[in-house]
Length: 195
Image (cartoon, rainbow, N blue to C red; front, side, top):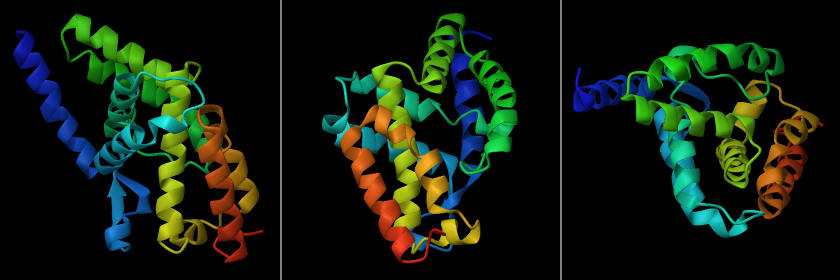
C-alpha cells in the first residue's frame, strides 16, 4: 500500500471506536451510554476550553492530539472501568499491543510519532500529558454528576474510590482538582457515592 492508502486504511479502522461503549451516560440522553469516539471528541474540546487551568504551560495542539488518540486502543482492548483497579493493571499490555497494531497501519514516520505521543499520554509525566490525563479523569465525573450519579450508584462507587482514582486530576490542574473534590463531596452528600 502507498502512503495515502495506509492512512485511509487506519481512518476506516478507527470507525470501530464509535461502537465501543463506556460506563458513563451522555447527559443529553441519560439512558444511553457514551461511546469512546464521543468521549475523545468531548475531552479534546474540553482541553481547548480549559487550557488556562493547566498547572504548567501546555502545547494545546499536542494535548488535543493526545486526547483524540488516547482511547483508539479500545478498538482491540475494550474500555476499562476506571474504578476496577485489577482490570486496569491487566489492560496495559492489551492496550500497548493495540496501539502498536493500529499505529503500525500508518506510514513509518506517522506511526512512530503517534505511538510516541500515545505512550507519553500513558506515562503522564510531561505537562501536556498530565493536563490531558486530568481532563480524561474529570469528564466522566461531570457526566456521572449531571446524570444524578447513575453510573456511581450502578457500580456502588464510594467517595474514597472517587477521590483516589481521580486524584490524578491534581497533577494536571489544581483548579480542576478543587472542582472535582466539590463534585465528589456533593455527590456523597446526595447519596450518589457511598460514604
